Image 1 (cartoon, rainbow, N blue to C red):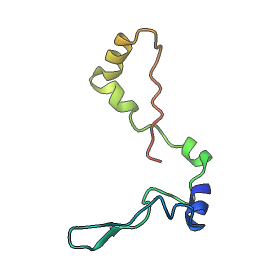
Image 2 (image 1 turned 135 degrees about the vertical axis):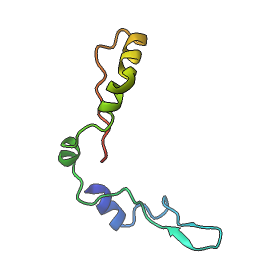
Image 3 (image 1 turned 180 degrees about the vertical axis):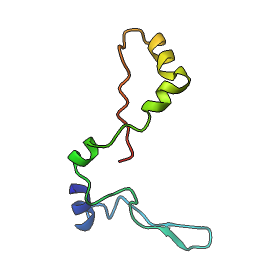
Length: 80
């Protein structure tokens, strides 16, 4: 919510520049990943995106074997 308010207030005006294609047509002029209704609480409610990948193929097992002092890999990356 704070990022959306900052965008609306023009605080990113010098940080985000328009992108044009080879023909000079505007293809991007704003941050596509900003979601105005996103809160810390809504992000906390999302399920981890990569937990299943860690289980498939034993990737977590390989990492845990190499880094033996790590007890568990907690996948916290999500779609938000």
